[in-house]
Length: 82
Image (cartoon, rainbow, N blue to C red; front, side, top):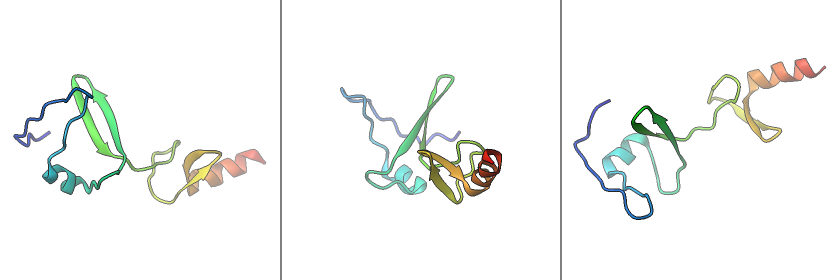
């Protein structure tokens, strides 16, 4: 993990401001969803991309019974329901 050399303080509401360079690099625009992960003693931010709950694929996902599923896994589910 590469340090950007930027230090920001957490405000009273728990917010931080991401530098414009970071937002541009990740393609983040105002109101874009961001996922937050904790790995040991680190907080990791990632631009949210809806993915299949079964295989993690982000291509060609659809909403099936309020869950994101790729078309391949959806076909597998449909065959299993018969």
